[in-house]
Image 1 (cartoon, helix red, strand yellow):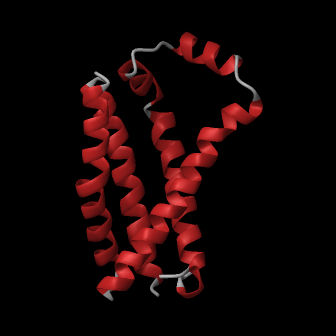
Image 2 (tube, helix red, strand yellow):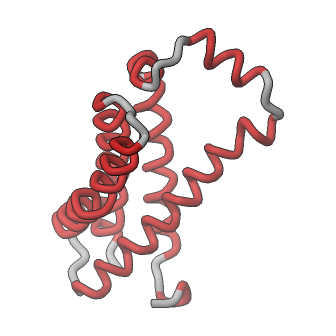
Length: 142
């Protein structure tokens, strides 16, 4: 699949919506997320204070680029299924999450001795992102 045949608008809208969801999600769970990492608010503030503006922005840019790629790939899956509906997008997003995302997060966190709560918080964030992406792509159509 090439970008010339993809619905670029739907891919970008889906990525933006998922990115906004992530911001709202992590803002609302910030204290629990920091606790799951074993950090205090003061530690996080100290870490941020030592970073340049570019270093502070880099993770947000990286997540947005990742969500563009995820949307493009999920779009490709829907093309190969030849089914553009909200339902197909939701199911495909959920299956991609279950098969690839949550398994990767759980595996990586297990080997680095991260708390199960961190795995849960991060996994649900990516589930939300993939469901949003899938619903938007399926709803926009080809």
